Image (cartoon, rainbow, N blue to C red):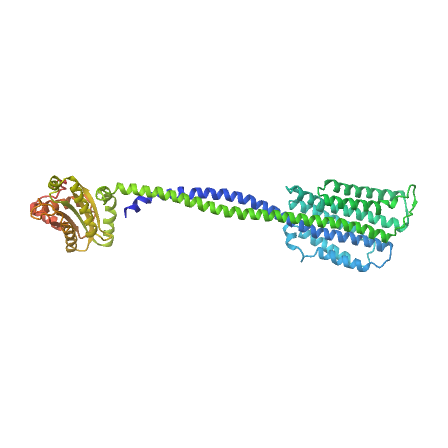
Length: 530
């Protein structure tokens, strides 16, 4: 009962001792997990960027091949229309809405891709356009390359922190599209020159400039890559480029020049096309490797998050329960200390401090429940004589026996008993009538007498007995404990005067009649040794 009153002010202590460290740890963990999650999101964004460049590069490659075929059809009526139609279907599918709408929306390029798709469809429907669409294809390729550069920036690929993935991005996504476009330009010029079988100095300058740009891009690609296998592959493409493309002007010293090359425009188209296909393979191999590395990194971040969360949950639970355990240990110690402060050390029942702590609560509860209330004082008869006869140690044993008997006589939840001081005890309980109050008080008195503890000088009983003075309140007003103690003490005095080992109970009405009879006021009498 009394522990509830003692623990109430310490709810804040529970929060501080058990919850505060856990909350601070949660904040720290949340910050760490948030950083890992941001890295995961950044990596996922890069993966999306690589997927977008796949689609865009496919479209660029197909448009370059279509542009080459258009040039061939302009100088040669060879039957290449079937190949052209297949390429037109491919590039349309590369840009089609159904293939990658979420990626386009993610990078806000949906409108640009739809516009390019519509231009391509319109271009393919114009069957009569044989020559004038060449520049349009170049413009479409340039637009798609610009979108790739935008994607590398928006997806974070250009800022990738790891060396291998950064180089793969630089090679596959930045440099290869520039190289293939430069080679495609060389192919177009070469087809035109081979078709005429002669070259002017201005055409030679145009072709030479394109060759220099292309070779510079290939060598630059070779220098910046750190992958040995890829370097060897690029070296092979550089040799192929020099033998199949650069050698075209080897016999031209003065201009205009008649070409002695045995290569036909169609053969040149396929030879350079094979070179373009090899660079395409470099792009797709590099991009696939880049995507795989990014997926591995993303998986690593996911595992870090899962591991961190699992370890954090274990740590949080450990800290929480450890804090709670030590807090409970402290609270138990505090409860024991508090219990000691409200417990009589000799008899182990409540003391006067406990009486003050719970009296108001219980009398108010009885008032709410509409119950009568009984307060009584209990005094061991001739206790001083007992101590003088049997010694103080035996006297202490008597007090313990009296306290134990209360637990038998007053066992309801609304029954309370206390050591008041010396050989005196007090109790209170609820009762619905004076008779019930009297019976319960007599049960207390008889319970002690029934212990049959020898006390030869306690005449005429020869056993230890007690006297009880009590007051019964059928209706509770604004009574205080001092008033009840005073009234019970008067009745206890009467019980002593009436031969001891008896119980006297009064009521407010009886006290009023007695006061009127003697024309006196009831006063609080001091407790004395009896």
